[in-house]
Image 1: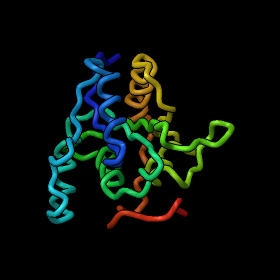
Image 2: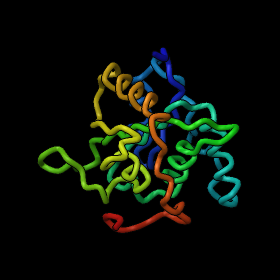
Image 3: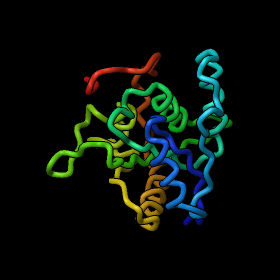
Length: 177
């Protein structure tokens, strides 16, 4: 078992407070290698942004996707998931864990609408594919660490689904189809 994973946190910027809470909850249980607000200039060309994202993710062993109400719409979240799941010579594949934030409205039976989470995340945690893990928000660092460990172990058990086209721009609406 790995003591501390290097974790990249992917999230929609409106959920920045949850990212900070996640980091506080996890404390020294993880090594944070995430991008901070302002680290990447959004006005540079897409190829350079993608290259910079990949630079942050290259040392990560797990990507944690904080799933809020509109996270599925964000192109940078899509790019970060794609970068984390690709296996390249210089960048090993990451495990993936999605955490439903309190801002995400789960169904009454505690299930989620697949069309309201990032499509690339959904294609890797659903059906027979089960490449990654999902969980609901908790303040319990032990529970999160267990899920991070499981996601890390799953990263090489099968190949992730990378068939979705990369978002070229942010999406809109209340769901993808």
